Image 1 (tube, rainbow, N blue to C red):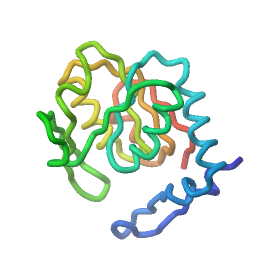
Image 2 (cartoon, helix red, strand yellow; image 1 turned 120 degrees about the horizontal axis):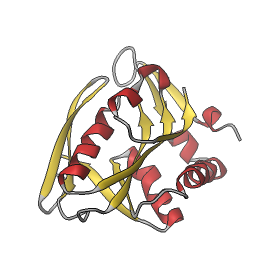
Image 3 (cartoon, helix red, strand yellow; image 1 turned 60 degrees about the vertical axis):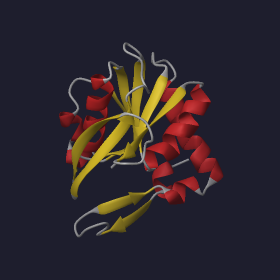
Amino acid sequence: MDLKTKIREVPDFPVDGISFKDITTLMKDGPAFREAIKLLADACRSRDFELIVAPEARGFMIGGPLAYELGVGFVPVRKQGKLPAEVVSGEYQLEYGRDKLEMHTDAISPGQKVLVLDDLLATGGTIRATIDMVKKVGGEIDALAFLIELTYLEGRKNLGDYEVISIIKY
């Protein structure tokens, strides 16, 4: 199955010049969504991690099902002000603006290995902020995983020496 054909591209969203990759069209297709999670699971199954850490909102859409499939825990990374307990935060630059993320300080135990995941790797800003928060609380990054990678934006260059797994490349 060619999953790329299941992803809608929306020109000039959310701002002019951005070609937004909309995964809702993939997700509404049950067999395609299942195949996407299966491919990610197969690519990550041999890795050594106990938790998947993913930013909202689209990271949740992929991270939750993947954590379930792999039998590991899931840690949500939320936008500022959405989590009820003590948090660690990180700011990041999107290709079209700035934002701030937060994660509970007790979400990851010191030394615990995690897979950091998002639906899409563009510039790497969101994941860089997530990596920084994981490290602040003492977690260890096993690898980074993405459903989609926009290779022309060279986001991997902003992520250091971590192993990067991606399933669909533009």
